[in-house]
Amino acid sequence: MNKSLNLDSAIERDSVQSLRFKFGKNWQQFLQILNETRLSEAMLSLQKMLGLDSLAGLSFLDVGCGSGIFSLAAKKLGAEVFSFDYDPDSVKCAKTLKDQFYKNDPLWRIEQGDILSQSYIEKLGKFDIVYSWGVLHHTGNMNLALNNVSSAVKMDGKLFISIYNDQGNTSDHWTLIKKWYNQSPKFLKPFLILYTFVRAGWLKVFIRDTILHLSPLRTWTAYGKTSRGMSAWYDLIDWVGGYPFEVAKPEEIFEFYHSRGFQLQSLKTCGGGLGCNEYVFKNSSLHISHSRLS
Image (cartoon, rainbow, N blue to C red; front, side, top):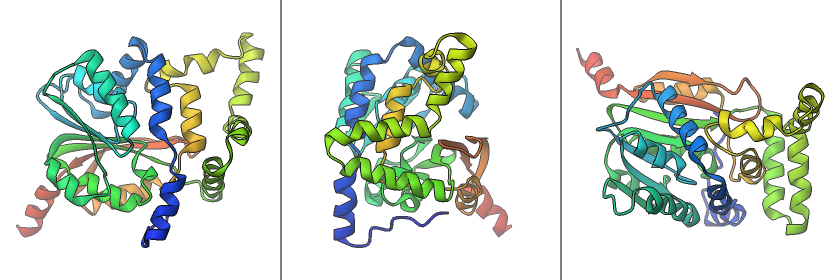
């Protein structure tokens, strides 16, 4: 696995925190376009990866809940949900959705919290499903986050995470772009967004859709129907701004959790390019330890 940022000094921590992208501000904008179609896609993505039609009777921990859409999706699938995020604006997003759909429901709790705090995670207890999509690589210490998130999974429970794919020098390049974006004055940010739009392949998509379908926005506008209910625009902003930023190869994530007694149940890769690899693990650590004793 790539070397964690390992924020050993207060100076290093303060430096990274000063460059941290304001994910919650981006998610607040996303909520303005959230609709039933996007929510249905979010629910379907949970069902497919988890291999479950319903989450009724199960507890669901949303680590880094972001917009809150997947907490809401889990709730609609029947789960008892606990959501937390480091970013207070993301916490507000989740609370906005709860107020809209499940106001005063005691089986959906939301608060601010830090996945890097082991004491905080221990306080939460254990959950049937622990979900953290595109979060742990933005903490500034991915290895610690990967370890802490696993401690919240019940025996035989499931851990559903996604981690940015390691592309070697290309990943190093994007780390630099992300730092520049968060350091740059406001008037320069559109240029970095445009650069990312082109470099991420969207210009080619626009040209292809124009030639083949006479509709340059065809794929762009259909994005929410095929990408977990997300938005092409807000995902683009999330990508260029998403710092801290770490990456890992699929085999590294597999080995990390296999050594802790987790079994891989489902894997969806991004094909070696930009984006996240998705993993669902089952916590079988107790079964493994028993087999070693027998």
